[in-house]
Image (cartoon, rainbow, N blue to C red; front, side, top):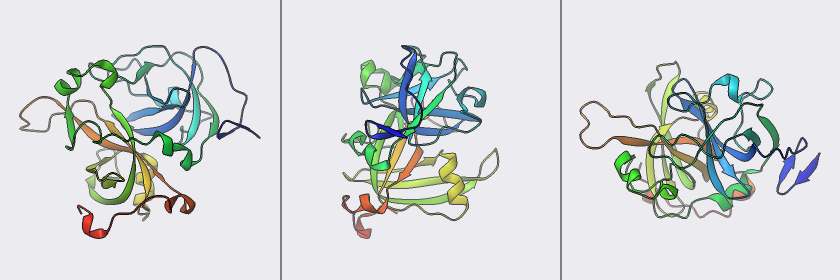
Length: 253
């Protein structure tokens, strides 16, 4: 095995102009299929591959690599167009083109530190949702719907049964700059670990994404897109000493 950049390379790189490389930072539930997203390390930009389905979700036959799911931290090469359906409010979407997806390497968790957000808020505000009208009021490049944050505190709780089976889980995080968020967890691998009794260790890196618009019963106001915990990357012991912890008195839960 050789090393390319800061990640371990396990197969030859393909320089086909249609292939786009991302570090996978989300493989989360989306209407029975998955939402895949990651960061292009060359540009430091988020990319969300989208299909031609009405909500852009990625079906199994499109995303599987050697009959296995793309995993968080995998370096993927995906045939993508230069543009994609933005559904009126998302700036990260690129359409998936015909062709096989490839897994070409994997990054260590610490490699992601440089991509952690330094923004004042987790996705635009301190609420659990962002309205479509607010996103549409921004220039296209500012319509962010994906963000990586460093959580120095993280608790979870079960909130009932999922329609597809298994439990629903909600996470509450406090970031390294004091932002707080409680949101539904949509990372299937992490949820499976929770169901087996695992509990998150702080600190960790969390991918937060916005859902498609969904109005709860009796909702008043503009269409909301809900913040979701789409992926959780727990940092190894060696990385934990570099993160300042907050005291229990400062936690919101």
